[in-house]
Every structure is written in C-alpha cells, then in structure tokens.
Image (cartoon, rainbow, N blue to C red; front, side, top):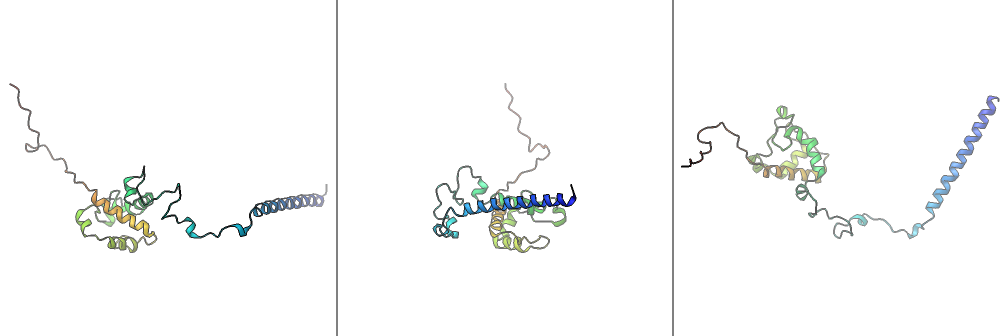
Length: 184
C-alpha cells in the first residue's frame, strides 16, 4: 500500500474517533445540565455552611469537649498546632520547650518551662515574637492567627506542666533509709 493511502486511512480513523468522542462528551454534558432548571436552584451563600450557632444534626461543635477528645484539644491545642510546634519550634526549644533542641547550642533559646520566664512573658509579646521574630528567632508571619494563639496556649501549658525532678544523689548517711528494727 502506498504511504499516502496509509496516512489518509489513519487520518480518517482519527477524525472518526475525534467526532465520536466529541459527540459522547456533548451528550453527557447536555444530559447532566438539563436535569435541573437553574432558576430552581437556591443561591449559595457563605452562611449556608456557617452553622456555628446552630450546628445541624451530625455536625460536631468543636468548641466544646466531646468523647474521645484529648486533653490538649480541650485546651485548644490540636494536631495543626502540634505539627507547627514540631516543625518550627522543636529544633531550638526542644520537644518540651526546655531550650534543648538540636540547634539550641547555636541559638541559645530560652527555657519556656522556666517559671520565671513564664511569669515575665506576656502573651502579646509572645505573639509579637512569633509573628515578627526576635534576636536569632526567625519570624513566622505566615502562620494564621488561630495557629499563633494555639502556640501561645501550648507555651503556657509547658510552664504549667513543669515538674521538678530532684537528681538522685550519691548514697550518704543522711539520705539512706533507716534500717528495719531488730526482732528480739
């Protein structure tokens, strides 16, 4: 068969396929669009999904404690806040905020669990530092306000959760248990 005849045959097959595909797409589009008269559809508004005051049946009110909700979530610290803390704060401040993260030796961050630091720090200053940065701490201006507020709550919780652990000292006569009384 000559090459021109083969290319003409291929072109004819491609044209038939393109026409068939176009017809199928138009039929599907026409059948799906003609089911409802657009005038019968209600106008959508943002209020359609703002069921904060009166949640619809089956919706969860996230502002109240619910079964299975962790204590952190009840305090306003959710998975987004924890992920933000882990990604942005742990490298310097450490997992529990003691200023012992892997980069702490370079940046010398404060111990957020220190009662004196907690007492002196004001929430508005913490917010400003998170958004604008301070010293060697970078700014996290891209964080949404809700996340910043959650981080402040988490930092405050770190201060409340601090427990003083006394280091075990060497055995001395003063801290050894008294011997059991001898039986006669």
